Every structure is written in structure tokens, then in C-alpha cells.
Length: 104
Image 1 (tube, rainbow, N blue to C red):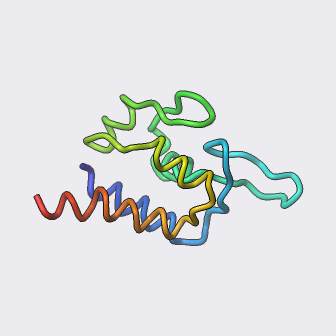
Image 2: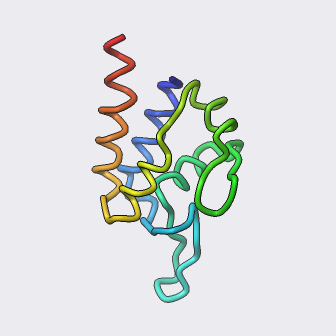
């Protein structure tokens, strides 16, 4: 796994710089007058060369190429869309991908 990209993603999710949204990688909220992001959309913002397959998911091959392995993006999208806050998603990413990698 690309530890540096994972660490940047986790830091971005914790930064408070991104407003969380659901259902799409990125969308403009006209009521709040801000852009909202899914946790996967945050990843795409910090690494724009990762391709989206649609407005909801990232292209699996592009994601695998940049991450150096598979990310369970549907699981992460579900956690995001069911209300798990970005800092908790960041903790989950650390447990699942960073800590597992450091123990290998």
C-alpha cells in the first residue's frame, strides 16, 4: 500500500478542511453554499489523477494503481453515507490499511 498517500488521506479527513456530504464524491450544496465531499471524494481531491468511474465511486484500476493495493471503497462509502464522521473514517482507514501494513 502507498503509505504516504494513505497518511495524506487520513490527515485530510481530519483537517476540517472538507465538509462531509453523502451520495456523491463531490457536490455543491446551494443552501450551505459550500462543496461537500464523500470520504472517497476527499481522496480524489488530494490525488486528482485518480479517476472516477461515476459520481459515486472511484475507478478501481486507477485506485489500485495509486494506492498499490485494493481499498474497500464501497465499505467506506457506506460508512460515510450512514453518517460516520470523517475523523472516525480516518481511524478506520488507519486500522485497516496503515496498521496492517506496518505489522507485515
